[in-house]
Length: 117
Image (cartoon, rainbow, N blue to C red; front, side, top):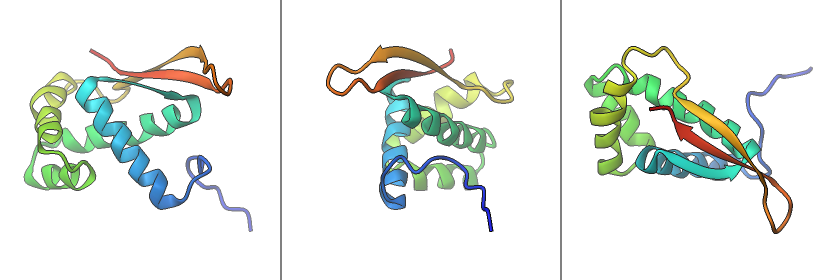
């Protein structure tokens, strides 16, 4: 039976992928810009946009859900104080991917993920 899996495996285990996406989204929310490879950037966009959409409810359950994904109080505070008001009228598309050429060591394609201002 053919099963359509969502997202790519990125060559790591499921727990590693989840931890990597949590860390990268925390960095994205903190610095509003992250540089990574293109496949990781595409997965990061999916993951971080779901988190922002979930945070837009701004109730207690949303805060608990975001805090369970990102274990840094300062970043969670920034999400609810800065990012949610910025995107309250927007229905999606909170991030952009810019391709930035090839990495010097292994010629992997590099991308910059930015939050839209």
